[in-house]
Amino acid sequence: MSSNGNGNHIPGSMASLAPAKPKRKWTRRPREGGPITIEKGIPLPPPTHVSKYPWSQMQPGDSFFVPNGPKSLFGTCSKRTKDGPHKYTARYVQVRGVKGVRVWRTE
Image: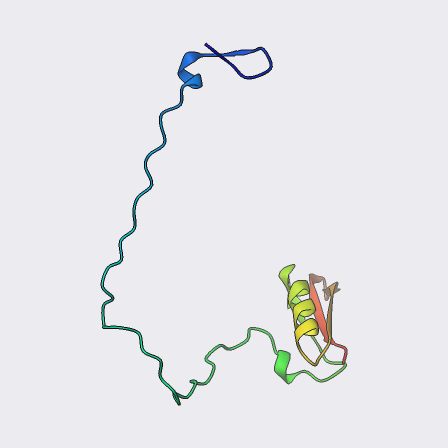
C-alpha cells in the first residue's frame, strides 16, 4: 500500500497508475498541390461580411434598439469605441413593454 502524504493509505489499484503511453512521433507528409510560394501584386478581394447592426450608417446621437439584445453587445460597443474613431454606449432599456439593449453612437 502507498501513502498520500497525510498518513492515509491509498488502495493498491490506485497507487500504481498505468504507465503513460509513449508520445506519437509526427512525420511530415508531402503537401498536396506542391510547395507554397510567395506571390506579389495579388489584389485583396472586397469584404463579404455584412454586419447584423447598422454601425456604419450611424451619426452622433443616433441609436438602435435590439429586442432581447445579447449581453455581448456591451462588449462590442466597448471594442468598437476602443478600436475605431467613433464612440458607442449601450444600456438595458424597455421599449413598449419589450426589454432589450439600446446602442447609441455618442461621437
